[in-house]
Image (cartoon, rainbow, N blue to C red; front, side):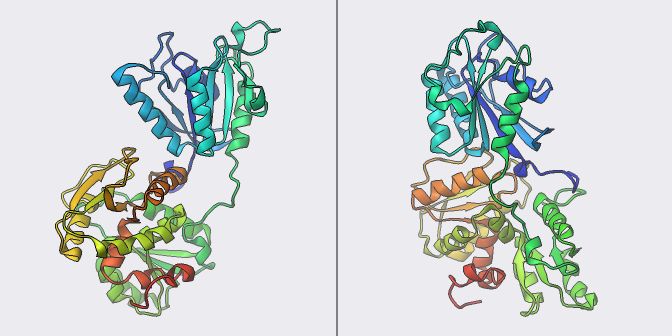
Amino acid sequence: MGLNSTPFADRVHIGFFGRRNAGKSSVVNAVTGQELSVVSKIGGTTTDPVHKAMELLPMGPVVIIDTPGIDDAGELGELRVRKTKQILNKTDVAVLVIDGTQGMAGAEWELLEIFKEKKIPYVVAINKDDLLEKEDLPADGGLAQEAGNVIRISAKTGYQIKGLKEKIAHLAIPQEPKKRIVGDLLQPLDVAVLVTPIDSAAPKGRLILPQQQTIRDILDSGAVSVVVRDGEFKETLERLGQRPAMVITDSQAFAKVSAQTPAEIPLTSFSILFARYKGNLQSAVQGAAAAGRLQDGDKVLISEGCTHHRQCDDIGSVKIPRWLGEYTGKRLDLEFSSGMEFPEDLAKYKLVVHCGGCMLNEREMRYRLKCAKDQGVPITNYGILIAHMQGILKRSVELFPDICAQLPNTR
């Protein structure tokens, strides 16, 4: 991925929902102007959620998600419905597509209630207007109270598709100022040293996404990024000729980099910066302390937000389990999840250790945090747990005084 591309997780996620054969895929194709989804008169053609990252005017970078029918039947249908409901956890704007010739039914009303419960901005698109007489009222089944959110369209003729796009764009406008990863902590021409170990688990020929995004945010702030491997870090500091504004390290090199970074230079990690960026730094710092309370047989969930190929010394499936065992001295019962397969029921776990979530949008990350909080289960992330286990967590969050103040006065 190029540095000028908008990451998948930072795009507005627009989900299209509805019953089978309501015309969801046709509406998706009409809105995007592309044949993104297979269209058929046979109900249930869309069997799995279809994701497509694209530029969609007037919104800009988005992810379009076409979902299976919410009323799909049978055992396979139940699985598809479950996947559709999972998609809601990362949907920033929902489009409920209604067959105008049939009107609302129980499945649609259920979706509307979920939208409201999850506080997802939504628009109801009453499709197949071309099949309705012009004097007919839309078969809305009681949608009068939703008037501001409803629009009559025809995916077949293109009627009001532009109006639908405008409604979606209005709902997609962020209500808060854009968050920064690290740029707000830097002044123009400040030097930030980024430590990125290159080992067997590193992707070939490129940097991982959090490193790319951090470099771009530093450049956007007018500061200077110096990127080095951990093996050249100490000599780089000596050769710089000036004190850097901060050092940002990959969590796996935390202990080595901490030992080589003078105490007066602020030190943090990509994981800590991304926990702040995703809005879960405080809960992740608090959750890390639960590692010290683990007992033999306790269940711990280690969760990845993506589904990358596991390397021989993978951090989530190999290194974190090894370091947890060494730190606690206990025989833990570890379970793993990846991608969208995040358990709704977390009650059996004593701790959830999550990746940095660079592939998850903010809404999905908030959902996972809420699941843990509502069930009283501590949750942390890889880098923050590593810093805690190595005794350098307080130092690594000194850039954030409100977080630092909550920790014991230990290094």
